[in-house]
Length: 227
Image (cartoon, rainbow, N blue to C red; front, side):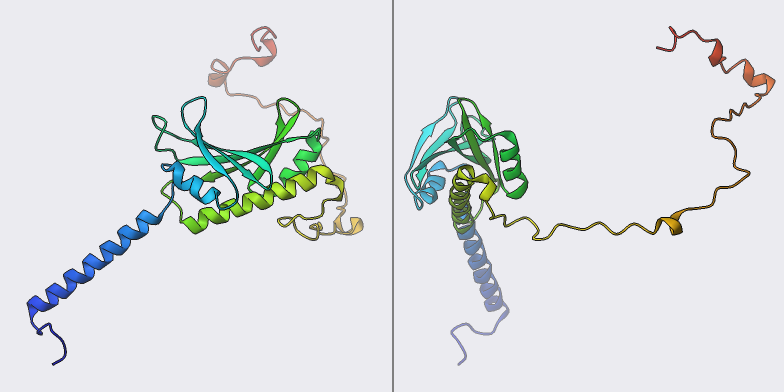
């Protein structure tokens, strides 16, 4: 006896049905594990793995999370919302009191991916980090995003203290690209032709009689009409 299912057509159909049900159940479980911006509590739950996180609402009535990492307060804004719910993306933002100029901030933006820094009202500098959550991401993926955000905030605070001494630029090539050497001028030079036409020579084309009536005489047009 090889099993409790007899080897019949109906038994094979039953086995296929059970396999299909198991696949559907697994797919459903995997879909339920995904996190998107529809669920602010799920986003806040992951954020709490790195510090405090409290759910509020912004001035438009959309969800807002106020969090703290390493003593730095940051906000999580929700975007693409419908009726203050069913949002599609989030933006993490932190403010730093700093008088860093635009050149300093632009250097950061050129050297680091994902985040962007800019001057904010009130004498602060803003650091923001946008995350697309449409159709959901795994909890591990979102946890990794918050880990990147924590590292980015730490690095940015260090950069603002001493931008000239900052050497950590993980997304910049270690050696600048070198342009290919130009060919030797003697080899690249071409002998001038003695019969070359003059550059300023004006060539006039005589139009057939039947076209002269269709084409206006540009020299006779006044400047006022050509403006």
